[in-house]
Length: 146
Length: 146
Length: 85
Length: 85
Image 1 (tube, helix red, strand yellow):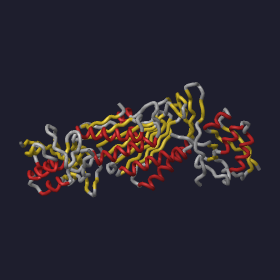
Image 2 (cartoon, rainbow over the protein chains, first blue to last red):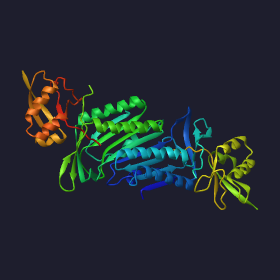
Image 3 (spheres, chains in turn cyan, yellow, orange, green):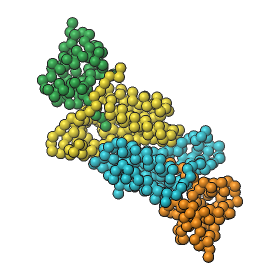
Image 4 (cartoon, rainbow over the protein chains, first blue to last red):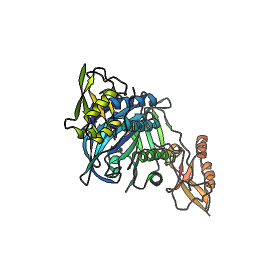
């Protein structure tokens, strides 16, 4: 399988991502890691709770990977895992990786996966602030691609 | 130290790169890994020997990182390690990583490091083919940036 | 003929129901626009109604368009604006 | 006054000398263009002379321009076209 997608409630592995995204004919891999930041829009963040729709998430992840494969090459390998549950500052919320024969495809496809995931995957985050307050972060409205 | 550069004659660690490229204020990191490919310009490759000028390499690596830091932000973290010696197909020849508050800077700076390293760092590779032959790969002529 | 459809809640909608679901009654071949109005009637909070305007309905397979018929038997979810990563 | 300068070889140049170095004799304040001619005289192989045309001389600190004086005491290297990664 050249496409691996998942939602996880345990620590994400970058090693597994890079092991999956490799092949004797692949000279390049690009890996993106998203982590919980201690500051968002001027507020001190202590943790973030990720809520997601697991089945639809996996469908959307796979769809995005297939689009990238069509655009940048059938031989590419893809990895997209997103965390759910409560994460402390510094923890990885998402790991995305792509490998390809040459570097340009890896960089472009990896960036594509990141951007599309952020705009299309049914994932929501609730920030927990140091002052005890918490808030659901505003996002991108979904639309039908039927 | 926000900039780490090195030339190594042992296996490169992506874990160390991602540990270095992290900070409570950094929500993103991008990591590039270059690996030895089994095929180059139609010839079956068995291994590649990397020759490099260690002192000048480290100077050039550091210079490139400083340029990226100036362009994309003083707070960014950078990692650039290149392997030397003989590597089998699949082994990592270079690991480059950048972390930043937001993702765009990580992607752009990481790509910058990769491209500049390829054009400016004093590194040479000799491909060893399955048929027993070997050849130094043609490259980019260096010029003075004085 | 009408049917009971249970809408699963996600993200900011979760705070409006402890069961993370709201049931609405719909005509047999109702479309998503009809579902949206029926769902709005169940909301007592103005913020929730505002959130509904920018939210999408979906099955486990795909996001639904306003003119789509609400499929029978499928699990339906209400998805507020997303922000993964 | 002339001085002996040892040029360290890298990449494809390594095959032209088992010591990975070639020594040339240079006037005291010779520039890099002069060094290049002196170096060319030491090469017997046509491929090596062709490679020299697209190669740069450098100290451990930086690549030198053709008009730069060859610095005294510095380690000098000849760098063929590069291809890292």
